Amino acid sequence: MTANIDNEVVAGFGDEWSRFDQTALTEEELGRMFDNYFSIFPWEKLPENAVGFDLGCGSGRWAKLVAPRVGKLHLFDPSEDALAVAKRNLASAENVEFAQAGADNIPLDDASCDFGYSLGVLHHIPDTEAGMRACIAKLKPGAPFLVYLYYSFDNRPAWFRLIWRMSNAIRAAVCRMPHGPRYVISQIFAILLYWPLARTAFLLEKLGMNVESFPLSQYRHNSFYVMRNDALDRFGTRLEQRFSKSEITAMMERCGLKNITFSTTSFWTAVGFKAEPEAGGSALATVINCCFDFGNRQRSSRTIACCAADR
Picture 1 (tube, helix red, strand yellow):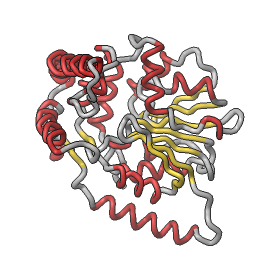
Picture 2 (tube, one colour):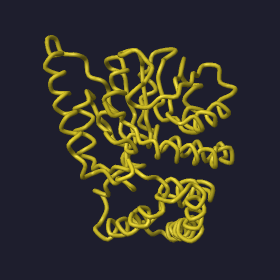
Picture 3 (cartoon, rainbow, N blue to C red):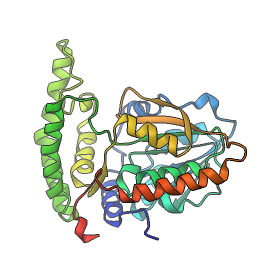
Picture 4 (cartoon, one colour):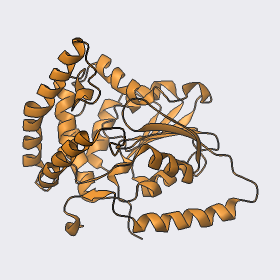
């Protein structure tokens, strides 16, 4: 069976988190970024001393704020370099455990966790839905799962999507490069594109204008450090997949989640709860899941991969 992982992507993120270990972030900025994702997370529904997992923990920046709120947090990442950064950032936390693992080899018992989350990760693996299903398998019935997946600009005008297509053509070239040149070019983009556009959006907003559709307006309140990090993330990643809100909803439901809620920021961030098993329905569910797994392996139109011939 082919592993649900792209080793070039893993190496790229190891390089990214080694360069941007998040220590330059202020607590205030990290808190704002955290709230963009976790504002819809149902903390009040977690049991006391809840046990959960962070799949694709990267630098551990989210885990740093989750760990104090729970009993135990498992951090998984397929990159050894990323885990090294996360371990440094959570060195003072006593309720965390680390393991080098991806979506297809999560070292937890099924139905053992009270919550889970995976932010900005599952769209960077070959089979996003299979990765999500693997996460849901580790949750207890009724447990919440928070996910962030790249949106397909389904809530944006046509001209916005055209700009993205142009930027994606550039990404297709940059992501083929070795890590060093890839990093340098991404930083040039941060200087020439991210910072000017973000600051322009900031000023226009101050003048009372609606800037939600202004390119890179989401960075108008962020530091240049975050822009530099995200420029490398955007232009240096070899594999990404994008989904509409309706596609994400359907995917989450097929994976066994219900009561799905979407955030109004960070498109698309969503949370759902693992459904209670239906009596006598487990065999049918297994057949259905296998059918969906097969169907998803046949779909490749949403996968935007650089150097596909190399893999």
